[in-house]
Image 1 (tube, helix red, strand yellow):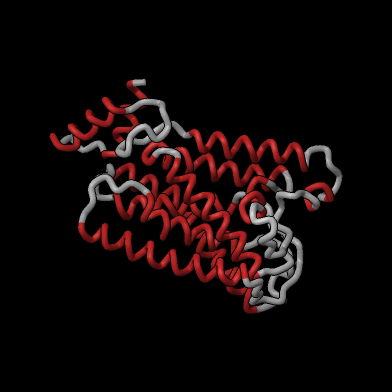
Image 2 (cartoon, rainbow, N blue to C red):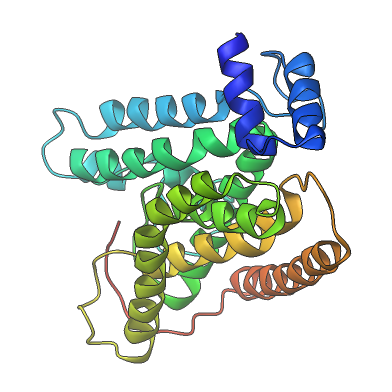
Length: 283
């Protein structure tokens, strides 16, 4: 336990050898327990990571394993079937447990397992869970608006939310992070952030050109919504261990932008408004 709490203390409060930083790390180690969200000022074990990964694997064996074709998957009550169906609102999130095939599941779980535990270790389980769930939900709604008729499965929207939440974490806590560790994080995160930006380009291309990449393929809109959630919601809900005035202002500005965007997307979805004529089936 001492090694675990010591490593988490370095992750949360940096490894600088000043008296102040040492005091913060010592206090963190004294408080640390394995009880989730036991204290507003420390992190904890990655319970959320284990729960989501387990549910995704179970869903794969229920709907994909030894099932020829994708008929059982497409008929699932959990899938988002390309309709803005508010009579069954759970579909806007539960699609994230389903995956098209084994490689789809594996690729998403690799990203999920790389980025989620580190957030939980510094911020506990509830805040990363909020970012993930809201990111998936916004992705489901936005996909139905800009790509109506496209079947949606997969945890990638939530994964993008957590990837970009790391960037939000660096923005608000970078001043206390160990610089070498922060550089390492940036090296790991840069390709993922680049992929999210490229997905934003592809989403715009698909939206403006109905023949771009056909009607099927990946739901780039869900990826963009997830990344947007990670940055703007993440900056507000993640713990800011040493708040500076500009950080407080930035958090509220980001939250204001996110609330407006979420309200617009939700309103369009409830109204059943489509802004694209592409049809197809996707994951």
